[in-house]
Image (cartoon, rainbow, N blue to C red; front, side):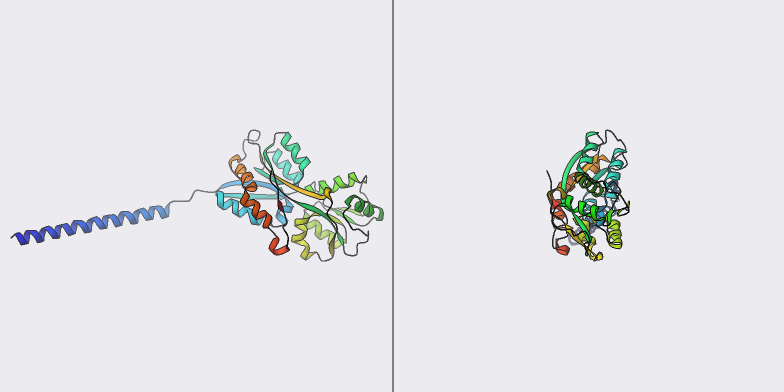
Length: 289
């Protein structure tokens, strides 16, 4: 009798233990399922207005995905001339700006349309021309080079789009006391990549940022660098966010994150290394303050 009672007790205990294990497994399975099925937060959206050189060089393809993944943000890039990018900032039509015309940028900051203004990188401008080099240009004196072009009426291709490069070009003409005009001076109204193509077709001289030149030069075998290295050809890029106190519809949170991302040490390393493997040199140099 005692033996039967003991067996009944053991059998009941086993049933309880199995039920407990099944319950635990069910809970664990349900928990895992709930964890697996938890929806990912929807990505926010940010508009970046920037210059065509950052796009034509391929830099944006390198850094934007890193920022998007790190911050769960979808960035809409609008690559235009710096003048147009800055205008988007003054109208509150962008959240962050990445541009390269310091004097014009400072005016936007002083007007209160942009804040969190940071120097982020630099390269330089170079004067490119046909390999026949009809104006006989060389060296690093960019003002003397433009004077020779004007005197010989050699074809010069200008972006003519109020971009940072166009602003620099006009600044140098002014410093050389020359007003470029005539059939030899051609304005494209287009980005750097397209303007280089026009220069190649028309066998003209053109001012370009070095990064776009390096990225595009393999398709421009009729052109070569003829003037480079002058201190007044330095090309500095800044990043900033559009001021949310003046433009209340901007995405200030992600814009601030983007500014911080661009000057972060890890991003600066990416910028420093960009282009080294393919071109043997960096297309941009990190330059934070």
